[in-house]
Image (cartoon, rainbow, N blue to C red; front, side, top):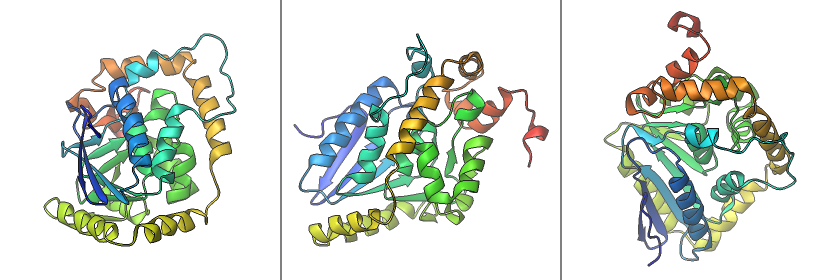
Length: 284
């Protein structure tokens, strides 16, 4: 049976696939989710019948929280960091959503952070909910960096200076700011986003499939490929996960409530506290 997954509910309707993420309690990218995402992305990429894919979450508070910090702490760090000549599997996963010949749409009703935000940033369109959607890259306060395309994609989407703020501050970016900066296409009220995104997706899926595919390809031809920067990003990530500061902060993050529902609802405050910042110090 195609599209048989534990953490993703897939419903196909003609050329449109609606995918609901359902990985309680907060949609963390565990090893199980990562493996399912790899398989799902491959299946979507090779499905000849689809032209539009919409991702949403069963949890209104969390789209995808971030990559499992405990899993990052288990990454092998023996020996020095090596510079690869090939993209790593997470880069391949993210790039697949950006380059597949289908239109990929993220309906982000709650929080999305870390590796989850990197996946979302590779989708063709992103829509959020007014006063509820939050995006966050909390890696720098943990002592690492966004190692799954974040340092390469965010500057292309929001510009260099705003990408610097998102990545280096570890602060939440609210829906209104994310829309103004061009990260979110549009924001809607919570009770209208389903209908608005569904109407757009259904409309695009009704168009001639080759026109949709070549239209996406032509738009992508306007921007240069990020492959060289991704290799540097992966190398810097490998160097950082070997540092004492990163390992201490990631462990402390888990101890003070990271990857719990309560903690993740204020992940920017948790990340700031890792480095001795109080609320007053965080205000800018």
